[in-house]
Amino acid sequence: MSQWTASVSAAHLARLLEPGPATGGTGRKLPAYRGLADGVRLLVLEGRVQVAARLPAERELALALGVSRTTVAAAYEALRAEGFARSRRGAGSWTAIPEGHVLPSRSLEPLPPDAAGSVIDLGCAALPAPEPWLTNAMQGALAELPAYAATHGDFPAGLPVLREAIADRYTARGVPTMPEQIMVTTGAMGAIGAAARRVAGLGERVAVESPSYANVLELFRETGARLVPVALREGLGGWDMGAWRRVLRDAAPRMAYVMPDYHNPTGTLVGDEERRELVEAARAAGTVVVADETMAELTLDGAEPGVRPMAAFDRGGTVMTVGSASKAVWAGLRIGWVRSTPDVVRRLVSARAYLDLGSPVVDQLAVAWLLRGGGWDQALAARRARARECRDDLAAALREHTPGWDFTVPRGGMTMWVRTGDVSGSRVAVAGERLGVRVPSGPRFGVDGAFESYVRVPFTVSGSAAVEAATRLAAAADLVRSGAAPDAEPSGLFVA
Image (cartoon, helix red, strand yellow):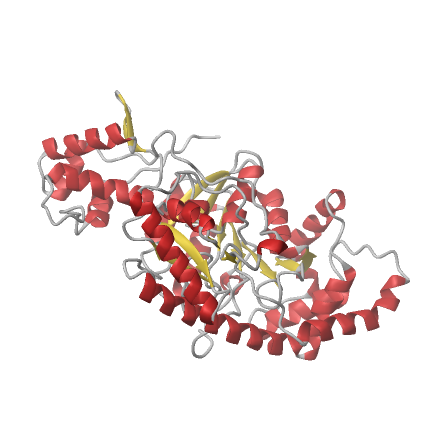
């Protein structure tokens, strides 16, 4: 396999640095080299410049910024001294994370039930089941179970009745789909895992949004993939198509994993034109796009956004779509699916024989009952109303109690990406656990330690609980500022 090293051009770095940091937040004007070094360091920590990316030559960056070469050389030296750059004679300089920087633990454990009364858990972007629709669906499933209980019970592709119901829903969304294009899986993670095993072998490159969903990044690492992060635009600005085209052309990844609909963790919704451009660029590069649409129906404000599924722009099997009942209905309903071409689905089904064989029949019948009988839309409406209430209450509480923190409220999804101002998000997470609030820090959602100054806040508490969560996070930030918070993140935080 050919080697590929990310690089950042002088012109692109100059654009990212404008307007450059001049005071470092102290009100005192910094030397030019110090401001430049601080700017590059911040870009690395926020994931806008990839770790291990080759930096421009000193002369090129000096010309792009309109400064002296001496200024750039001094900035690079400062970055090397702080561990944010490394150099080798004749090979140039590249970005880095300082040695000893604590990366998030891979040990993910749910909050013990007996702690739920004293700890506010913001690690999991999931709400209680919408009732009575879940119970009604289970009762409907049990009524249909006898016919299936008389069989062997193994349906590697999924129950025909559920495959048809899922296909019909895609067709209603403007993407004509046959049941043969659907494989039912055990949750969205089962679908993404199946796609990864089918497409990206050991050592293959997988392009991912930066930041991206923590559990999927961990799944790719466990399968031996080589992750290539592609930074999202600032705020909720969508994909940087220039960056995507460069990565697809130069790195030639076998697979790209994206979440275009209310992206987890940022809440970004990507428009139709960017979706079309990404599919076209991926097709030209021979890259399979795995589009995670688990949040697609969680619009919380106004009318439906009118964007089309990624598969609507596909003309030949470039896109594999992932869906799930976990966010739209309930996380405990472990039913997901893959939509692709019939040939790809047949191969996925064949490969499943030595994995989990199939998904629980009763859960499949419950999801089919919801999709066929209209209960899905009613449950979804209840889920949207609850998530909207939680989002609005949390945003208001954070604005009041953490005024130095910065975030953009998304119009859908289940999560908000919050910059923690003058304190480390990882240290806030540590201190927060000591104060009775669990929140995942930004580095969990990045590749190689980026996003140190962020936390992810899910829409899962409202009212007084939202106020209390914000109050405890503010106290955690104060604890960090006092120097009393430890450096390491708690190893037992469950992220979903």
